[in-house]
Length: 435
Image 1: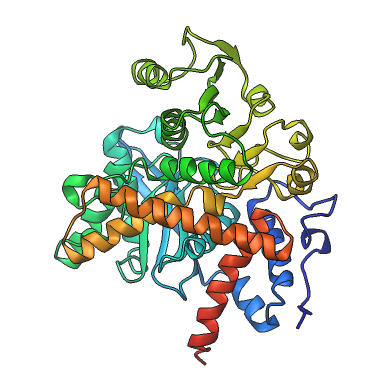
Image 2: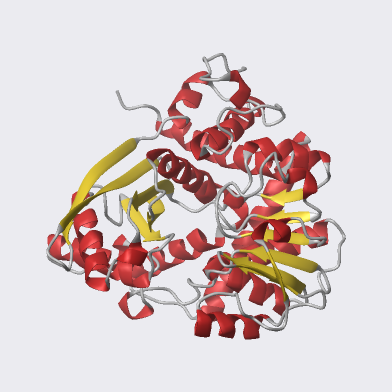
């Protein structure tokens, strides 16, 4: 059966269209891929309508008292996209650019991401529109606790489990866990993941997303019969995901030609020494000023002559305007949504093998699942066990997506969406509809 339901805009249905409405709108970009994958699956029209709609969208006010005695009021969001396979899972970000459309898109991506790696979570996402760089630690704590209390009815180990995201970290997760636990009158470690290890966090969690990127990149190189040792890599973004990806790829014998952050990029044709670069950033905060390399821009890094490009920073950095200039043979999407729907067809026509975000960066949510399991069982694994189980899931998931793509003659992104949608839809069929 083909889908006969109306579409909001026909230009958004197929990734091979030349024109897109609001190319950089993250929700529209995600839905364009979803629509095409649903068509390829001949998804039942009723299920199509269900899976295209977020379950719950929450908007809250977050008033706090600043250190100077003034009151500020921020806007907070939490979206639960789909919980058919289990509790919602998704990060919380603090950033001035947070929007409801962005949070909806990220919640949907989390739904598909959890399904791609076949862990029993649904997808959610949250954020507060604020600039954490202008806040003291006490102010950040007040924002965190007030936001947590505002959405507390949705939170819980069996309902919605947050994690760190842009501009949030282990400390923020500790505040969320404590706030929730105070309301429940007992300690609930499994309400968040990405916590400090001392509070029930998992070993290996901090490196998990970057490790997952390394693992799927290695699988892609093997699949394309390209050597792992000596493969040339450029990494855009040198935060947690980018720096760990670069370090672990270097350990696999890959040559890291360039890395970048918001201050710009650095390039060395002979390969950077990533441990030294990480040490420089620890001392100086940014890459600028690192001496053993040439200075380049973020835009220049994206179009370097390399084998592997890892966009691990922001959304929408590869668009229809620069996709034709990409020279990498493989793109491993460490960030969420780094490639717009408008760029997909260009990359595919140019033979670029894209490991999509919902697979490439799923290492983080996979080890978050391990943390949740450990918290609920009260028994914790050593780091070697965590990494072995992560590798097994990432390698198996890559092979399943590649198999789906091969059977249907499609690219890896649509293969990943089809794999995810099929799994979520199967659970909806089994559960039926409560009416």
